[in-house]
Image (spheres, rainbow, N blue to C red):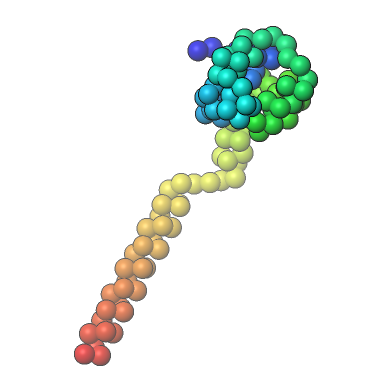
Amino acid sequence: MTTATKPNHIGKKIARIRELRGMKQETLAQELGISQQSVSHIEKSETLEETKLEEIAKVLGVTKEGLKNFSDEAVFNNINNFHDNSIQNNFNPIEKIVELYERLVQAEKDKVTYLEELLKKK
């Protein structure tokens, strides 16, 4: 599967957004109240009526403008920016693992203390 789309081919953009959302043609068809074959035809169309485009955009959870301006490059840039920002926020997974381990150890110590107190009462 290629990720490049022609800038003006709205059907390919619809298909790509649908795929990125993990949605099947059947699901999109059901949401739109049309057949799966109609969705297939739409995804092969280079242009689309504005009203239909707006309806499809709503079902896909994007704006009509977002649908028109969609590009794989923009998606990858957003993902890369998110990844870069995560690194810049100094997120260290090892520190989080150590923190979790320390909390688990403390919970076990609390259990032992509680059980020792129960034994003393008997």
